[in-house]
Every structure is written in C-alpha cells, then in structure tokens.
Image (spheres, rainbow, N blue to C red):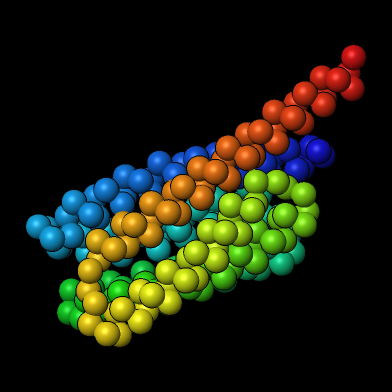
Length: 193
C-alpha cells in the first residue's frame, strides 16, 4: 500500500466512523420527533443532505485528489445543496413534495456513491464494497421515497431507517479500512526488519 493510499484510507476511515455515529443519532432524533414534534423533524430532514455535503467536502479535501471520483463528489455536493433548498422550501407547506425531493436526492447521491466506490475499489483503496452496496441501496430507497412522496406518503420518520442502513454500511467500510491499515502496518514492519 502506497503512502498516498494509506493517507486516503485513514481519512476515509475517520469519515466513515464519524458518519456512522452521526447517522445513528440523527435517525434516532428523526424517529423520536416525527410524530410529536414535526417542526424539529422537518429541520432535521433539511439538515441531512447538508450533512452529506459536509462529508463530501471533507472527502474532497482529504481523499479525492483528482479524476472521476472528484467529479462525482463535486456533483454530489451540488446535488445535496439543491436538495436541502428544495426540502426547505417544501417541508412546511407540501411535505409530500419534500419526501419526493429527498427521494430524488437519495437516488442521485446513491448513484454517485456507487460510482465513487467502484472507482476507489479499482484503485485498491479497500473497504469499498460496503460503499458500493450502500450506493445501490440508496438508489432503491430513493425510488421508494420519490414514489411515496408523489403518492401522498409524508412519513419523514421512514428516512430514519434509511439513515440507519447507511450507518451500517459506513461502519462496515470503516472496519474494512481499519483491517486494511493494520495489514499495511504489519507489512511495513516486516519489510523494515
């Protein structure tokens, strides 16, 4: 494993573990507030794509140096900002549209995550099969949210389950990267002997 790849893997591991923790807390908050405090749930709903944007920007600054992965993530960040604006404009007036917007964003973000995962897997950065599966699952969930929003389903708490599944994938990715980094550290010790 090269030095750049080790640094990238470390950055991704930190990102994945932080995302895991945040998403579990966020999901619990959305599920707890959706029925009794819908205004708080609505604000959390707007914040989720912005959280994804913040994570994408971190990833862009630490791991995605150039190429197709960087382009995909730049598009993902712009998509997240647009989704947050769209959700913010509709969540209090037409919640069904905000669910549909979230679904469109989840589909697009999942597709872009799938692309980045495939690119990184090809570059042997490891821990990416979980991200590939997460991207595919996000695309399927996005379709369900989009169609649900169009057919008058306004249950924002359903998004909590979506975030929990994402957290599981990020946790698996973080564990796989930790194992990869441990193997790389062991290889360095062996070659220095």
